[in-house]
Length: 84
Image 1 (cartoon, rainbow, N blue to C red):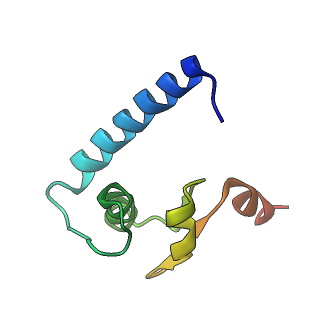
Image 2 (cartoon, rainbow, N blue to C red):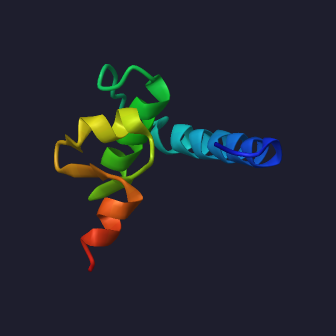
């Protein structure tokens, strides 16, 4: 999917996002068991803690959740279509 150099950049970006998510939810709330990957649960917890309306992602497991409480989980394309 990515060239080797791009994959390194993506992994680095993912690490930064996961670290930021951990900082946001550290003193807030814990959500577990929604996704197989606890990092995905952390993304959902971050969205809840920040009162997000949407999670926009290409992650297929997160997309399969579709909605958590009032938070819609959409692909970038579906999110874009909301505003067309």
